[in-house]
Structures are given as structure tokens and as C-alpha cells.
Length: 223
Image (cartoon, rainbow, N blue to C red; front, side):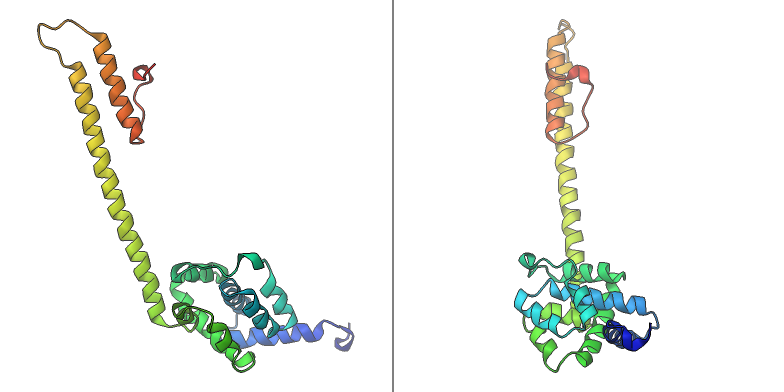
């Protein structure tokens, strides 16, 4: 079909021009990757701003990219109040890149879009975003440092919680062993008392179950 007979040709060509501009900013010939990076930028920003700001941003996009922008969009679910860590993770997943590449890639897309959008459009979008997220979109390293600090702090909290839980369970295990030992303990003059032994075993079993530990022999469960 001749170019002038294809009503969609101009829209397709404009979308290609935008993707090519993004690819040039990323210094790549991989148009598929450039499109993923652009789409990741649009969706990540879209989900973090309100409906009104989102409509103004979408109005600046070519027809085909506007359709991609609104793909999967749920107006009642925005803006999503995620922090730097979630923002970076979301962008990385959408773009198919490692988290440590988010800053440079997002920064390159932002630079490309600043050439494509009307003057001042990005300023209006960034005005409704927290400064730390704008830093990610501009490729600022401090934003990535903050992300790494958050991850490190979360890992430290997990380790502290894990050790505290382990310590508590060791104490519980000691209590269970002590109870069981008292139930099995007999003096030379004592007669065999199976009910006492069974009761001690059941009590130890309850202590272990309360701490989420593996169950003991079913024969010692409380009937």
C-alpha cells in the first residue's frame, strides 16, 4: 500500500522518530530496548502522579505512544505513594534492566523527552513528584545511594530480627527440654509413673508448637 494511502503511516512514523531520539540518548541501536526504557519511564511516572497531571503529560505524546502510556492504567489507583526503592524496582522491571542501571537509563530518557515535549512540560510533571524521585529520573547518583542505603538498612533489620527470633526459640527449646527432663527424672525409690512422663512430654510439645517448631512424635500429643 502506498504511503499516502495508509492513514496510520504518519502516526507510526512519529512514534518511530520519538523512539529513535530515545535510542540516540541511550547511545544504542537497539530500538526495542529504547522503547522499553521509554515505556518504563512513562508508566513509572504515570503511576506516581495524579489524573490531571497524567492527562497533561499524555497529551504531549504521539498517538501510538499515548496508547502505550494508558495501557494498564487504573485512574482510581493513582498516585501510588511508593518510595525511592519501589520506584527504582518498578522502573527496572519494566525496562528489563538491573537496578543499578536505572539512574543512567532514566536520565537519558528524561533528556530525550525534554527535547520532544513542549517547553516546560517536564517541569510541570516534576513539580508534583518528590525531589528524591526527580533525582532518579534525572539520573542523580544520590538517589541511587539512598536506594542502596534503604536496602542495607532493611537487610540489617532482617538480620537483627532473625537473630532475635533464633535466640527466643533456643530459650523455648531449653524450656521444653527442662520440662521433659523433670518428667523423666526418677529417684531410686520412685515407682514408674507413665502418666507423669506423658504429661511432661505433652507440655514440652505444647511449648514447641507455640514457637512454630517441628512437631514431636504424635504419640505424645495431648488427647
